Length: 315
Image (cartoon, rainbow, N blue to C red; front, side, top):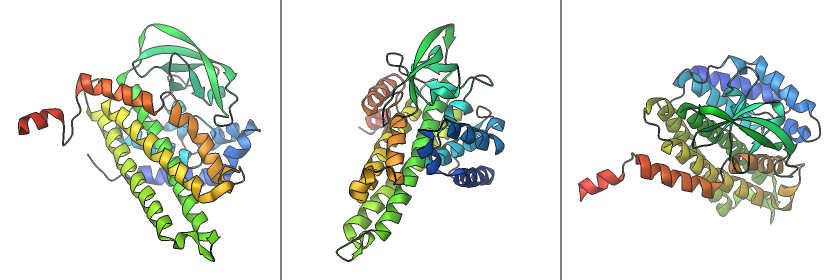
């Protein structure tokens, strides 16, 4: 595995970050809840920097560019289904993983028809039906599923759906940490900035270490996506589970540092927390992810420094 990201992918990420910042960043996500034109502006901005030129299934290097775009998009809570469009099955048909029992797609309004798949591989055509109308999922919609006869989602698409989703959450977590650091530097208690208190510094350091670990796990999982020839989803489910754990903890702590103001939408942390919820909960919440990962490990095993086979050999 190559830990360092290609310089071209990093440059692409920096260009995307600058373009989204110029468009308004988190302010665009905030306004998108009442202004549908915000999503159109986001799509046009992303298209102008090469969104539709990325060959996401072409290999690791192209997938890294897609992953970096998802991470940057997450850091701005961009009101657009980046991963879905990157994994599109045709020019106008995005792709999404869903729970077939309760099919919901975030930003489903971006297309009239979607290709949807369960993590187990069942394939559907999906049509947006109605908005969920939840404050913590302002762009989510229920969808109507129509099974594709004889169809099954590829292992690659399911892996990429999970891994790109983890990159999106990573970006949200990284932005939440930066917002928390900035707030603790200016917010004062007992006559000194919050950042001067040791407990605050330790908490911020803990968040930073967790996100750095998630970043490395995302890179490993993306590499594994193209090098593992088995049908296993163990690595992809593992990175989703860790993203759910780390980012939820980061968001909660960052919001706590803001106090009551952390629940006011004038503050970016409130927008980040709310807009992160579909990514944290769809298509699986943490409990469902654990169950799927346990089943996958029982079927395919888990290759690692303490894998069951190596433990038995050691005995």
